[in-house]
Length: 433
Image (cartoon, rainbow, N blue to C red; front, side, top):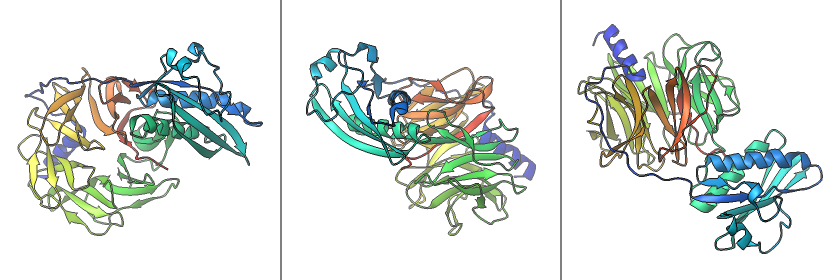
């Protein structure tokens, strides 16, 4: 394939834009919703912590709502006091909490401890009138007040649902709000946005390391597309692999130090893996076509990717041990951006329907496909929250590209990057402890 034709085709595969002649027609299935009503009392405070009780309550309530597991009961409906009265009491008046529709109750205490803020809480199963657990967290204040509340909320979610919440996680993404495409990081709910690259070039496709301590991303900063790594809290980036070939995307494996790459070498664009040290380069694909957009299965044994080997971009799955490859998508003439869910049950992807893209889910084993987000304007680049309850994606429904979140059941659509330039390429962090 000639260099100019190859470059055009690769850009189409990376950002979309081909015409669709075979549109997807699949059925919507299932629905869920919030499972629990939760009452949250304002915490008892020790001397010196009074100023934190109201902002802490708001942060905790917002984080519980963010989970999509809980609906917070309006304190005005309480039959009991809005503030915790006796944090050490062996029993609570469960009938009064159950009477207002609460399934759970959170009570607690806030204390100043040598300049830091400690939150201790108890959570009650109101229906069974028994304590579900208690815990304490200690964080710096006031900077970490929000993080303290969100970590507490995520544990409460786990106590009731069996899966930890994701409000204390972060999302990396690309924005041109500064005039250049730079990498930014924000909290899971869209707050506290901050820039983590500042090289005045084009930066794309951030991906988190399994422990959340590093990002790998693509940049034109060196004159050509290459993959760089960046440590959390540090402004210096390091080139991952000193190879003269163009590299278009790096994606971290879920369990170890491997990174999957899209690289153009020997007049072909293929998938490779390499260790985070830059050593151990291994070629995964050899077809005379464009392979890109790798996404690791949670077990690290398979990779979903996009290939145009049949004439149009479709999603494939490769078994890394055996080398076996199989085509996954057959409906639609342009399918891109696969993202494997944390439990492995689904792959989210962008499918072209008409002149725009929508977000679909497909079961990697059966191939069963269902729409998640359908809109007259384009929705692209899905990424999963680490608890598998939400998907974040880029949408042009308001003109510029902005990031939105939606629950796995198709509910609770919300915009998270209003008035922040064009935003794309979201990557949701793992849990960061």
